[in-house]
Length: 257
Image 1 (cartoon, rainbow, N blue to C red):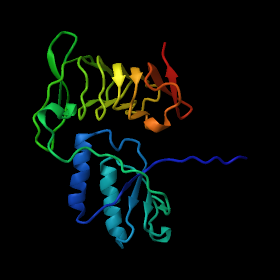
Image 2: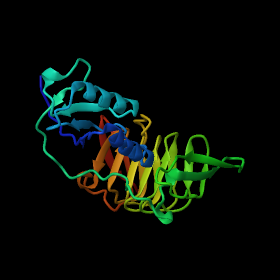
Image 3: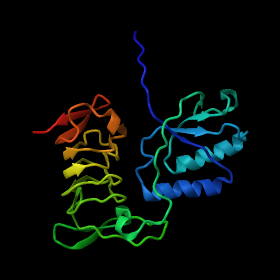
């Protein structure tokens, strides 16, 4: 029998009382970037808080209501935890901070695309393809697109600060995805241009989803919860046409052409 070790990067959240205000901030992040916490390992850090177990139960319940799954708790002895609670974690090494959606109200030219994506069905009728409330009250931005029940076609580049969200199927972008932009799809992602931002495919549990681009220069790519940042991309694919797929719980990078 062989035991293998793997290293994972987890997001560490520190719940601060009053918890209602803290969860308002969590809700703002989820509203701005619905895929932000999808399949990401989460650690609760309550070191130095002397948090009551009842309060911890309340926090865990509220996170479960938001589909945020906690894999461990740092700062509480395992003997204090009740059955069914995530296990106690200790140690760990801090890494760089994970960027979260900007708390400031976006300017009109960088408003998140999840605010309003205008699409046309096959009959040519106008239809709202994806719409979410913007907690900052920013004006909705219209994006030229063509869609059916499974896919959406974005007919212009995705600029920095913008997001495309289509959890029901594929997303195709005719143009580049700029650094700081994000494309989230339940199916595959096709970028006919440079992919410089973040691409998250298969967010609805589709392990067969793929990411295709004419030039790979991404900050982060993810398929079905597995992700890699630019520093970990396999050699030979950067700045080249590429596809990314999932095989045996690993992201595989391949050159195209």
